[in-house]
Length: 548
Image 1 (cartoon, rainbow, N blue to C red):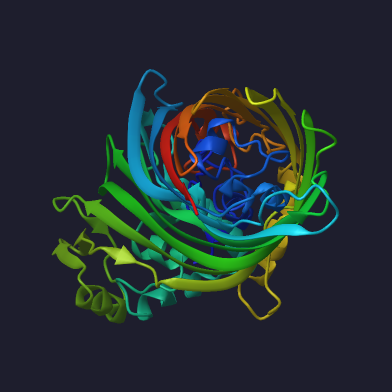
Image 2: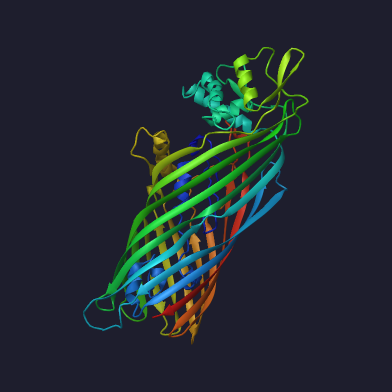
């Protein structure tokens, strides 16, 4: 099933594992794999990830490759990491209830090896270093849940509005809904529309403009939402950088990024009063993976030993993406009441329902369904291309002889240049991808992120700290929660111990942001609600390095 046809997904990123405001859209998926984060060794993450003007660290491989020109000997570095993500959620229909959730993850943040270029010669002549690294770009683990009681609408109302809209546009007929039963139900419906129809979560009404309505229209509803995701965005990078005169450094790199993402969303409703259906659970599963290429070119200018300036530009990552998705329903029918399907239902349809697990009884002259088996759609598969934004970074660093340094970066991220596309106009998602790419220019802003940090040295020991501010990339609120600040703040600190043979660096990070999520929307904005989510994470890293 295409995401844009109703897949409820929350997308999260490492910097604060933020929840995307855009549900049901390919543009949200592109954004998920486009968010720049603090990456590299524990040393450079401790100073806020700002290293455009610095060098002689394995972080330069996937950052500014010109920094490889500062290596005078070879080095191997290994960086494991731990992070814990926490969310506090408040659903607007019950503003006094806060739900907390968290998830923990261990991963490899960085592995790098640099083959150094030798001691400075201080005369014309090229000296360069070759390097390769693996770096974790994003970690996509998260868990979010919220609930509320007494809602005056149901998500089944949004199912009905969606089906009515498809019928009005000519994309769906009522016969098409009915015929969905013939495709191997209960676990192989061809569309979510047929799934809702044969799950009896939309009912026919006598109105030619809006032929369907949601179930249990006069009942208040208890609603609960649970989301869990796993995955990562990582990159192998091959880089080379060097210098001819110890004042001007230049480098380039080839990045081979890849990602794997799995998300499960369970949305449940229980009707406080009901005629036929007690409640139901709508479960969605998405698996997406891809691999691609990108290139980075960087320079560092070192007029003297006190100051440096750095610049680098990274092309978009061009991913080839594969995606599978499916939807499942578990409907709780009151067996003592049942769903009334009339006095004389079609015998062929009734036989089909009974053969796939529906239970029926006859009371007086009417037939009632007393149990519905677990239902699901086919597993849908899609292939398409993703393009992430261009990124430009510039920075400066001031050195205080051997006592340390202060550095700052400005990073420009061109989110409006993202896209999701396919060259195959026979692909069923061709139009959806075109619409999503157009929406990107409406929904996103290009942003400027700022990073500041420094290091103070006391012999073999170094103290470090930094701040990373990431601007809100969204140009619209998307939902009914108007007080959400989607910018991100990341605070970091660390220390290190270094000798002529090895080093050990420690770093800790704390990030926070806000997000919101709307489980479903309706034509009338007063009939549905959003959840506000305060998101934070803590992260710890340790780098072990040896010189050779």
